[in-house]
Image (cartoon, rainbow, N blue to C red; front, side, top):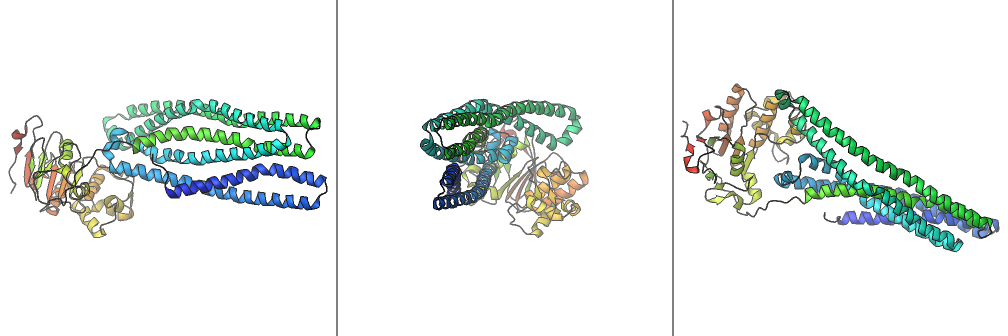
Length: 527
C-alpha cells in the first residue's frame, strides 16, 4: 500500500514527539523522587525546593503530553482508517467487476468495516513501544550511576522478557488469518441469505441455507477460540513476566541495600523505577497483538487495492448519439432512435457486450466501444441488469447519487417507471430511507425504483435486461408504454420475453444462441 499522506505523517511525528516527552518524563520521575529524598535527608532547602519544582513541572508536562497524545492517536487512527476506507471504496466502485473476480463482496465489506481499523492501529502501537524503550534507556542511564549490576539486569532482563513474549505470540497471526477467513465466509453466507430470502422460501431451502450458515458459524467459533487462547496467554504474560522480573530486580536491590552498597534514596529510586519498567513489556504485548492483527488485515486490504484492473485505452469523444449499436459476436444491429426488443437465451452476456462491460465489446457504427473515452461512454451508454445493485440511503440518493437533478426530474422518471405510488407510500417520500439492496421494499417496488434510476438523465443509449419481470401484467403494460413514449427518439434496447415491450417496440430481434451471426432473425417494424 502507498505511504501515509503528508498530514498523516505530521500527525504521526507529533504523536511520536508527545509520546517520547511523556516517556522521558515518566522515566525520570523515580530519579527525581530519589533526589528529593536525598535532599530532604541532607536538609538542603534550596536544592529541595528546586527538585520539588522540577518534579511538579515534569508531572504537569507529562499530564499535558499524555492527554494530547491520546487525542492525536485517535485522530491518526480515524484518519488512516478513513483514508483506507475511501481507497477501498473507490477501487471497488472504479473496477467493480475486477475486484469481484479477485475477492468476494463480503470480504470487501469486511475490509472496509473492520480490517482498516486494525491496520490504522499499527503505527500508533509501534510508536508507543519505541517511546517506552526510550524511557527504559533513561532508566538504564541513571541506574548506571546507582548500580551497574542493576543497570545490566534491566538491559538484559527487559529485552529477554520481550523476546519471550514474542515467541508466545508467534501462532497468533496464523490463527487470526484463519479466523478472518471464517468470518468472511459467514459474512458472505449471511449476505446471500438476506438478499435471496424470497428465493429460498420459494424453493423451500431455508433449512439448507441455515445448515450451511450454522456449519460456517461453528467453524468461526472454533477459530475464534483458538485466537482467544493465544490472546489470553499474551494477556497473562503481560502481567506475569513483568511481575517476575520486578520481583527479581527488587530482591537484588534489597540485598545491595542491606550490604550497604545502596543508599536509602537510591533504593527508593530503584523501587519507583521498577514500576515504570512494566511499560516496555506491556507495550510489547500490545504491539505484538496489534501487529499480528494488522498484518492479517493488511494482506486482505492489499488484496482489494491491488486487484488487477482491466486496461481501458479508449479516448475518443464525443459519443455519437444516433449510431448503429452492433454486437460483434452475434452480429445483431440495433437501429438508432427506436425501441428494440431482443429475445435471447443469454441476455446478460449479450447486454454486457453491447455496453462494453465485457472484453468482447460491441461497436457504435464502425468504432469499437472500447475505443471511446470511458467517462463519456458511461454518460451516454447505460446498462441495467436483471439484478442491479442498490445502496442504502434515501430514495433521492438512490436515484441521483451525485445530486445533479432537480426533484421534478426525479418525479418524472418515477412516474414513467410506475414508482411514483411506491415513493408516495414511503414515509418521507424522496427522503424516505431504503435499506441496502432494496430490502425494505418488495421485489416489484425495487424493480421499478431501479428502472427509474436507469431512465434518469436520458442517456443516448439505454440497455435494460428484464426490467419488469416482478410486475403484474397490467402494471407491466403501462410501464412499457410510458418507457417507449419517454425514450422516443433515443436508442433503447430491452431484453424481455414478455409481450408488454414487444407491443410498443419499433424492432424485435430474436437471437438463436446456437446459430451463427448470419442466421440471426430480425423482426420487422411494429406499426
